[in-house]
Amino acid sequence: MKNEVVHILLVEDHYPDIVLTRKAFERYGLKIKLHTVRNGEEALDYLNKRGAYTDAVCPDLVLLDINLPRKSGFEVLQEIRSRNCFETLPVIMLTSSASEQDMKKSYSLNANTYLIKPCCLGEYEKLIKCVESFKSRNCK
Image (spheres, one colour):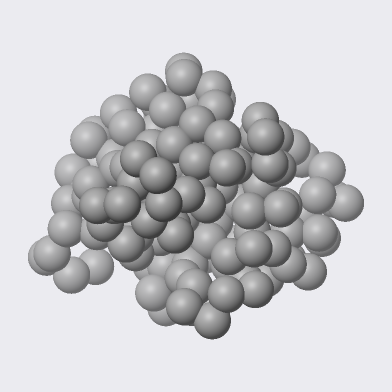
């Protein structure tokens, strides 16, 4: 990953998961700036620089939960992929769902990858490696 700061938009409504994700990035020493929104509508406002987010920084990567208030992660992903300006924006579905149906739907909507949320700080290594290689799409 480049030495420059990577801006990541975390779309997550569960506060403990926000804290764990932030701590994981700090622990692994990645140069990131984590921007957080708590529901699907806020995610779209952030990305489209609407309302309270008119000065938002364009993210280099989106970490998107599926189960969100107001608009689901699927709806957010579908809207992201429908806009030309976001078609190459990497989106990692980061969710607690291990459902094969959710995974297939995410990929059908052109998510870059699908990761099940780690349950503790020590299990974040896979996410960290994926974030480090997101530009080359080597997340596996």
